[in-house]
Amino acid sequence: MSESLEYTVGAYRLTPENCTFFTRGDMPSLIHKNDDGTQTTYDKIVTVRNFPFEYKERYITLLDEKSHEIGIIIDINEFPDDTRLILSRELERRYYMPKILSIESIKEKMSFAKWEVTTENGRLGFSVKDMYKSIIRFGNDSAIITDVDGNRYEIPEISGL
Image 1 (tube, rainbow, N blue to C red):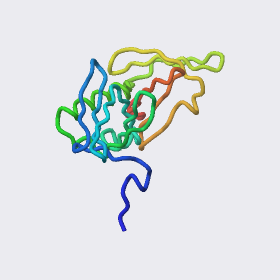
Image 2: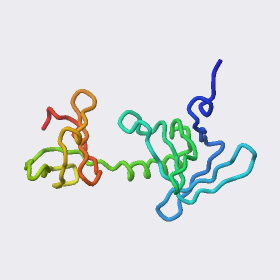
Image 3: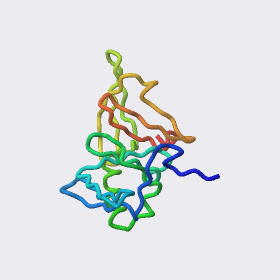
Image 4: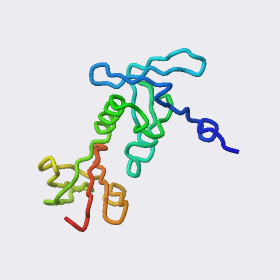
């Protein structure tokens, strides 16, 4: 017996049939057609990748401005081009993560490590509190570094540094 997504994980599936996306200023907005035929408008929505490293365009949870879950999009490629553009822009903004091309220096001082790196966008500096907890390896040769402010930086190929 096949169970619905809503029954299995408690998430409501958002589809092109029950959602219309638009922008207000720079913010993505949503008109959701409820099961009873009524509509709910969300002026500001937040996009969250449930699997941010594995699936960049799949399993996207939408939250309202109070962080209440609206539902989940299984794959943004199911939606029309204009909607995919709105969602893709918001996901890229939210998950902006410069790629580190080279590490110029790492200096430790008072339990912080100050990194100077060159990224695809130029030279940057950031601080890391705990090197072991702030660097997450994924795949065979990649890593994500999270700085003290919660910003993330990607090293796509550790062996290439």
